[in-house]
Amino acid sequence: MKLLTVLVAVLFSPALIYAQDDYHKVEVFGGYSMMNFDNAAGNTNNAAVNDILGGKEFMQGFNAAANYNFNKYWGAKFDYSFHHREDNFSRPLGAGNVDRTLQNFLFGVQVKNNVHEGPKFKPFGHALIGFAHQKIDIDSPQLPILLGVNDFSVNETSLAFAFGGGVDLRVTSRIDARVGQIDWNIIHRGDQQIPGITPGRTIIWPSTRQDNLRISFGIVFH
Image 1 (cartoon, rainbow, N blue to C red):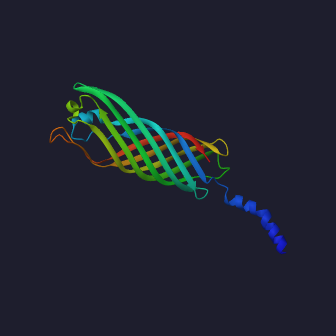
Image 2: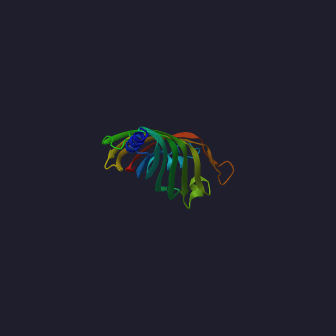
Image 3: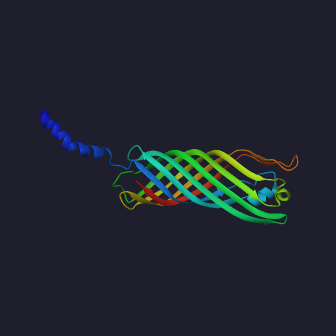
């Protein structure tokens, strides 16, 4: 009787293990990303800065993410994105260029059907929190005349969120195509002060909330 019990356990143990592990535990995503970036520069105390940086900007870059799934439907997620834009400008008092970069480092949860033989189209959603680092540089030989400063460089690390999701298309058992992902990227930017050439010419950039739209697509590996 004991021998029969052992044989049954040996025969059925692989099936039990597979039943317990019939979903993708690890998921890695990488692809192209674009950002509708809210500069929120129109509220400084310097009209030239507001003119050069005001309004939303279209930025390009990439998005990468890694998931560890705890069961068939949800898991922990790390998400990183990098976006960049460089522009030239010309004003009556001088010309120059503006260089902008935005990085998001986010952590949170993702909900998705992670079963090995899941549906062809797999919608997902995630809620993420972390921090964003943004850098804005204005370079011009006429910078003192244009802005009243010798150097204009903003580096800010801020609290950030991303809420969104998308749809993956199953290509093989190990590869999905992320046909679209849309995120509402919220950044709570802090105060910034840039010293002017003379006392009283400090550029004050007050804290604000930036509402950005991030769109990504690429390849998912399991």
